Image (cartoon, helix red, strand yellow):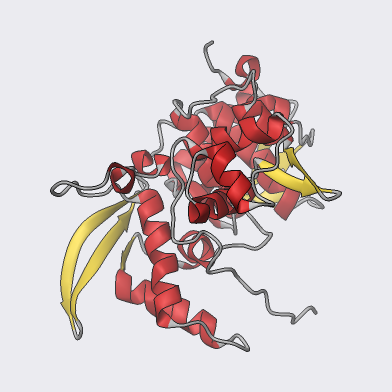
Length: 309
């Protein structure tokens, strides 16, 4: 048994959530053969961003899986090329399915995982949570490390996560850059629920959207199901329905889909793609068998993904 503890990241984003134009900028620069990240000052000129924003963009480009460093050189990943390349499916982040894909990429990232995504996706069981509860979970994780992090660092990490998903409240005359929401905030995946009175004053409350996700197409669900299976159940030909609905980094868990929606989508897949999936009904449990494994990212291309040119 491997008892090695997995350590999570709490910093690297420089307290900046993702901005709408950032990933296309990064992909465009790297596609031109430029490296905007090795030298921040050079990156400021190439990207038109401040020094800390350049560092943040490098973090997000890698975390969302659009850019990677291979053999000492930056390159656009196949995923990044399909979405944001010169002939990409959604270079300006105008399709909600792309935003769900980015949410999927971040929530299933297993390399240098940010703890905020791990906590909200895999550990937070209830749809409602308070900021104090999240900070307590962050503190408990940090306290297990050889060098625990400060409460300020933990709070900043939580704040970045919330600003990634929760639309800001416009107040007064603000600097334009400070009013730009993360593109993922338009998903409505997390919203403010109000606040409660705590021992230390007002405690903000947040709600995760656990309703049906009509903006997630069946083609997108199919891609994510294959991706999850390849990475988290790759040696299994058959999995339990509960694994797909509630398992670690599963489509049902990451998207917070109701159990009935998962059931409907799997039934649809088994009818539309009978060469790939079959639903098995047992006496006490439902299972899904995958007949044709694939990790083909071409499933995201317009002709396969249901996008209209």
